[in-house]
Length: 172
Image 1 (spheres, rainbow, N blue to C red):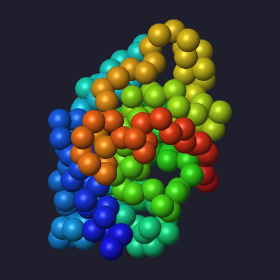
Image 2: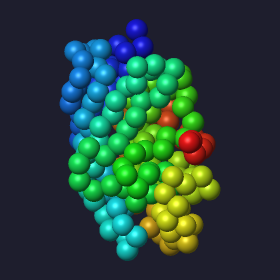
Image 3: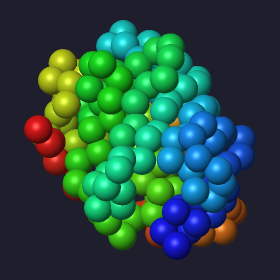
Image 4: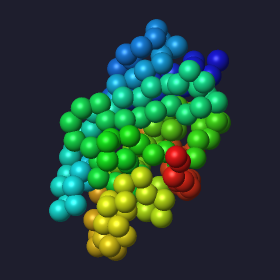
C-alpha cells in the first residue's frame, strides 16, 4: 500500500519542474527513480548556477522504516550546506509518515535554498555552510521561487509542505 501511495505522489509532482523515470521495479512498485529537477540552484560560491539537476532516488531494502537515498546522477552537484560534496543529499531527520513525493519536494526546496529548509548549523558541506551564513542576507536566497506542485493533488503549491518548517539534522 505504501509503495502505491508513494507512486501516486510521485505522479502528482511530475510536471515542468520535476520529471522522473522509473528505473527499477514495475509501477506502482518502483524502487528507483531518476529525477530531472528544473530549478535554479547554486553549484559554486561565486555564485555559479545550474538550471537542471539530474538525481537518482533509491528506496532501501528497509523502506519505509529507513529513508530513501537521493544523490546526483550526473553533472553538477549542488553547493549547499545540506548536500554532501560527493552529491548525496543530507535529508536531516527521516519522517516515516512523510510520503515519497513530500520527501522529494523537501529535497527540491534545498536546491532552491529555501530559508525554512536550509540548515547551515548542521552542515553536510562545511564550506557551503560557512558561505551561506556569510551571504544569507545578501538577497541571493532563495535562488529559485517557483511554486512546487502539491503531492496530494498535483496542483499548485503543497498545503502540506508549502509552509512547513523542517528541521535538518546531520547524520553520521
